[in-house]
Amino acid sequence: MTYALIGCGRVAPSHIKAAVQNGLTIAAVCDIDDGNITAMFRNSDPAPENWEAIPRYSDYTELFDTVRPTLVSIALPSGLHAKCALAAIERGINVIIEKPIAMSLPDADAIVSAASEYGVTVSACHQNRFNLAVQAMRRRLEAGDFGKLSNAAVTVRWSRGEAYYKQADWRGTWANDGGTLMNQCIHGIDLLRWMCGDEIDTVYGKTRRQFHDYIEAEDVGTAVIAFKNGVIATVEGTVNACEADIEEHLTLLGESGSMKLGGTSANTVEYSRFAGSARNDTLSEATANVYGNGHTALFADVIDAIRTGRPPYVDAAAGRRALETVLAIYLSAKTGQPVTLPLKDVRSTDFTGLFS
Ligand SMILES: NC(=O)c1ccc[n+]([C@@H]2O[C@H](COP(=O)([O-])OP(=O)(O)OC[C@H]3O[C@@H](n4cnc5c(N)ncnc54)[C@H](O)[C@@H]3O)[C@@H](O)[C@H]2O)c1
Image (cartoon, rainbow, N blue to C red; front, top):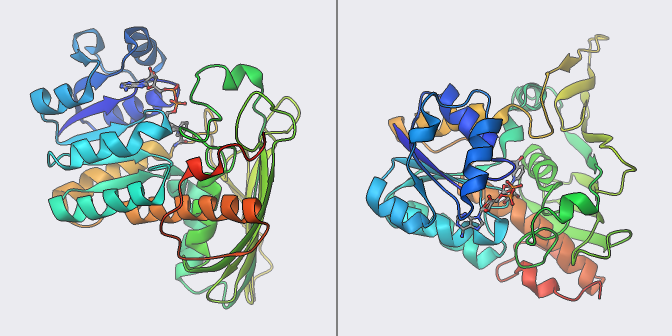
């Protein structure tokens, strides 16, 4: 199956690794900065054997029309995802879109409906769903081992300083990135919503920009979420940990089971206890960085979805739900009021000037 990568920056080596490990033919890559393409291949492990010979494009529409790959993945700055994804989908090309899939709900809705109109596979790159620890929690949930759910919590306590934000001018902006909830915490928010039954009633959020006055958006956000099935949950996302990432935790408590995932990005089972068994099963997955190992599994799932015609494990609607949750927290933080879902016409740019 032929494949192309659009956007060859920091996260791109995880895409190249996933493509190589899944046996995809890397037909082309695209970036406006040729030096980034070379750096990406040099940082990819494994890198494709013939990487110097892989055609390079600076315009993704030219790549789509010339190369016509079966699958592309989009790892551009977040504000560029929707336009690029729609350009691919309208040409019948299957797409993996890095998170967040878009910066506005109208754009996310356009992606969801274009995917079905053009009959292509579109997956949101929430690769942490494939973490071994997350899969262990999900299996317990689907087996009914938690019983009736009570409450849940996600905490992402990471550290990002000026050097990180100054790497590229899109970082921390309302139009192209958002703050820590939209960038670092959205994986945890995706997991929380997925584990708690997807259907949210209300969201109450508070956000602040405490230490990073050179970015536009928040560096810490908290929220209380009430799900339609009665589960209540909390969110804490921050890049204000001193010098180093501390943890990404996800806790789920039910009548007959408790589980707490941890590590730097929900890649360990720190605690588990189920009724009738005093065993506390723990699990740890080795990872090279906070992106984890999930890209390879997510690519494998998408390739199988394309081949068999089934929906992908993490579809575009799931990407929309994660985006909607973050935008609901932003909206509540702006208005000081609880926000009732579903939301339709909310955009990250609605929050421009919130911390000015
Ligand atoms: N799934 C994850 O765990 C994960 C991790 C990191 C980043 N991401 C997401 O991936 C995306 C990229 O993040 P990053 O950290 O790699 O950013 P980055 O800035 O390092 O890389 C973006 C690349 O896109 C290129 N680019 C910009 N405009 C372009 C255009 N019009 N056409 C072609 N190339 C263009 C830039 O030159 C750069 O090389 C973001 O949406 C981010 O949220 C996801």
